[in-house]
Length: 370
Image (cartoon, rainbow, N blue to C red; front, side, top):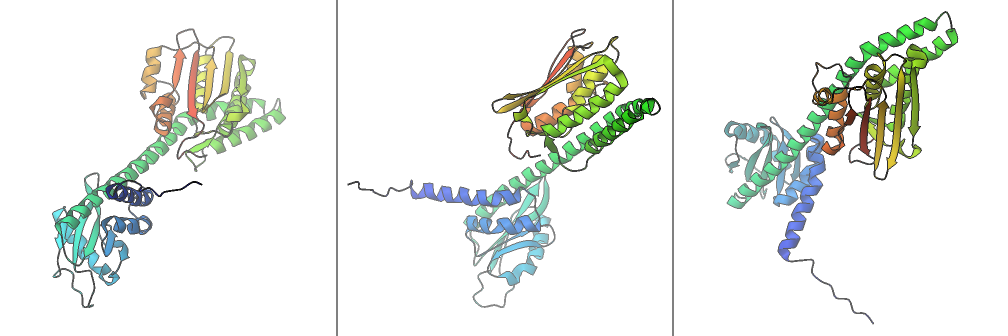
C-alpha cells in the first residue's frame, strides 16, 4: 500500500513570487498590442490583482480607457487626475479633496497616479484607488506603471519593425519593377505577330507575376507561392533570352509549406539573371535548390556567370544603394529582422567564378505565418 503525502510547493515567498509573475504574464499579451481601449480592458483586471487595490484605471492622456473594481462613478474624475499628473510628469498622490464623493462607504478616497512613458513621451496613466494613501502603494503603483511602460515600449518596437519591413518591401517593388516590366513587355511584344498563342500565355504569366508581387496583404508567404512567382519570372526571362538562359529547379516537397518573408527569393534569382548571365556570351545556367535540413529549410540560388567582387557584395549586404544589386541588402535585412542575425544571406562569389546565395530559414518561427 502506497501512502501519498502532500508537499508544499516552496515557501510562501516562492508562491507569492509565482502569483505575481503569473498575473503579469496574463496582462502582457494585451499590452504588447499598445495602449488602446481594448488592450486596457483586457489587461486591467490582472494589473489590479498585482496591486490589490479596490479600484484601478488605465487612461490615455485625455480620459479613462478602462476601469476595474468598485467606485466606477469616479471614472469621470480620472481625466482631471491625468491633467495634474501630466503637469508634473511623475507619480502623484491625490487625497479626498481631489476625489469628491457623496456615496457613503465608497472605498475610493485617495489615488496614486503614475505616468505611462513610451520613448520619453507620456502616453497615459495608471491610477490606483484606495481608502487611504500609503508609501507602499505609491511605490508599488510606480513599479507596475514602469513595467506597463516597458510592455508598451515593446509594442511600439513591434509596430516600428512592421512599418520598416513594409517600407522595405515597397522599396524593393519600386527597384525591381522598372527593369522587369520593361523587359517583359518587350519580350511579349516580340511574339504578338510570330507566335500569338505564346504571347497570350506570357501575358497571363506576367499578369499573375505582377498580381503576386504587388499584393497588399501579408508580410509572409509560403515557399511554394514564392517559388511559383520565381517560375513565372524565369518563364518571362527565358522568352527574352531564349536558349541562353538555362534553368534547373530541385525542390524538396517537405519545405513547400514553410513560411518566408514575402519577395525574399525572386530578387536573388533576378540578380543571378541580371548580373550573372545578361552580359555573358552564350548565356548561362541558373540553379535553384530547396533542401530539407531537419529544423531548417535551405534555399540556394546559384549561377555560373561572371561572379562578383566580394567587397562589393559586402557593401551591397550593408545596404549601399549606389550599387546595382537588386534588393540584396533588402532581403538580408528582412531575413535578419524576421528570424534573427543567424539567418542572414550567405554569398559565395569571386570574379569569373559565378555566384551562389544561400538562404536558411527555420521551418517554424514564433509570429511568422503565411
